Image (cartoon, one colour):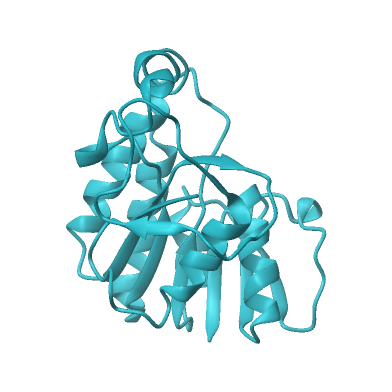
Length: 210
């Protein structure tokens, strides 16, 4: 497929780019800082852009078969709408150009899975460190769910930099009220790429954990 990967210089994004190329896909990496993309390949194109700029998003989406988003940022302690506004621009461009498949990484512990990332996240990390970030992820999910796209929202547990194992649990009702469940970014990327051709979770919000 001809894929657009948003957030390609982040941990999950880099894993998506590497694994997609290994699987034979043609990849366009949509990034703010191309110098941070250390991967080079004959089937990889790097496009400088900003998800908050509708024109650059529109240009990047045109002609693609699917879009995968691992969009994130480090502005955890301030009120933000980067994820939701950026995703709104992606959705608008996809609907305009007839690109249907949208696979987006968000997080376990939001929406109908609030509290399911364990006590540490529920009582400390989310309300103290990631309050604005998680609220924006909730707005991001709402926008996707109300779109006309063939979307799949992937909700990973706490992300790690572990190796790709290829064996993990996924499902709609996973999570834990007490323990913090984890998953490597490499395995999240593996699962997201499988959703390109698997309709099992179409318009659903699967959780993925070890």
